[in-house]
Length: 405
Image: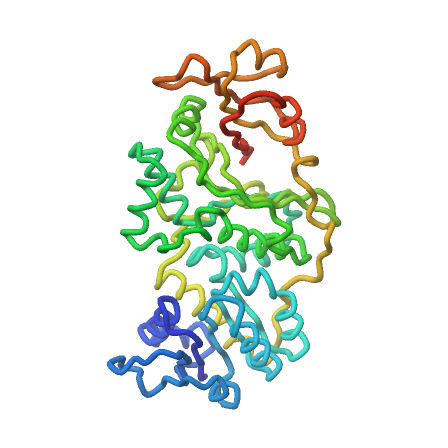
């Protein structure tokens, strides 16, 4: 069976490598069908690449090739990836992708096009790189009411926080090392401000609860305000700081979804996830908590997930997989600040007596070198709006959500 690849960057070249290096085992998992690369679409030239005869700059070479039934889209971004994918699906070709931005923004339209044509649109690699999560969420956990999901969904920020926690580095120092190692881009905004994790939250929420969630519905906060002082206080509380994407079920018509730094206590499976690794915890009513862990990015781990989807498409050429979600709405994702209760970590310029006069039950924290006019504490359970009311007039340095995962 012929397969085309659109985009020959890190992931796309990995897809070609995995297909070729695993040619002996793939037929055992497709019912005897072999996979053969037919075209590689990229605007760049690769004159010394062993696959140079397969390269094309013309998308129509793929679209009009009747023998190419499956296409891997590893281009990234919205355009031209959306236009190309839509045309392929309408032509009855199945498409698999690692493009989280495209799935989060336009996934509903592409799934509908696949449904109409009888093709498949699969995107296991769009969340968690090589970690199996999309298929387990849709199939293995299908008997559960999903109560919530919490995930470390970005390896760059997890690496930075690990360096701050374990090596005592400042945010700027840790970011520089992440860039030197190739974990962070020259412009790290999408990672450190939480946008990358937000897109993955949208995909997970859409799958878990059946309605499309868009990135502009998910309030997102990054890690740029996290300091070593916060790290030290939270260590005193018996926890660590992680950038978490969180999704909470409220009703069939309402969910909460947000991305932010969070205090994770050391007993949680998420607390031990270090460096560039990702982990996603799913809470089901029947199964309880299940945790998926592994490399969240990288050439071969991500290509592994893309090729797994290609194999799935090869097995389902004559039938459509039941997969996807329906339309969402503007009020589907609620304002979590007024609806979701949780404890909070607070650091402020204030006295303990001033804090005690405003909060019924707090746990004060300490750190080495703590200034006499600085307090840090964990509150009892309340909404973020209620917290802000209680802190009105106080010189707050930072607040961080405390998770119950």
